[in-house]
Length: 84
Image (cartoon, rainbow, N blue to C red; front, side, top):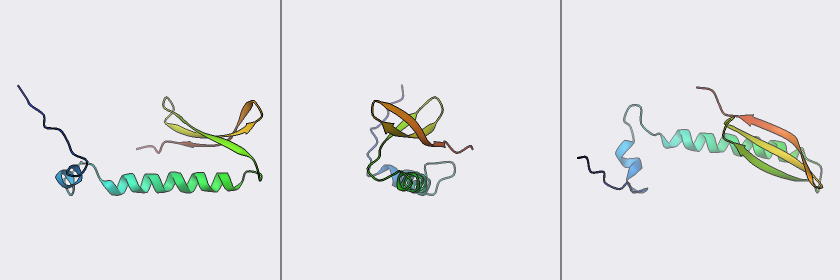
């Protein structure tokens, strides 16, 4: 029987840092930075007073930025997940 110890968010980075094929916090931070830059770029292109909805589509691994028009939505931008 294998007993698994609970992982603490405080100790996990220290347990895997620098080990081959393990979690790299820099990759997560770089992804978040890229998504926020993409979002900021497209939101700035929207007309003043426009509203938009950010939606994640798991089946496509994509983020959609939808400009809202009254009751409906229209695609304003799409960011697909990076390919490996």
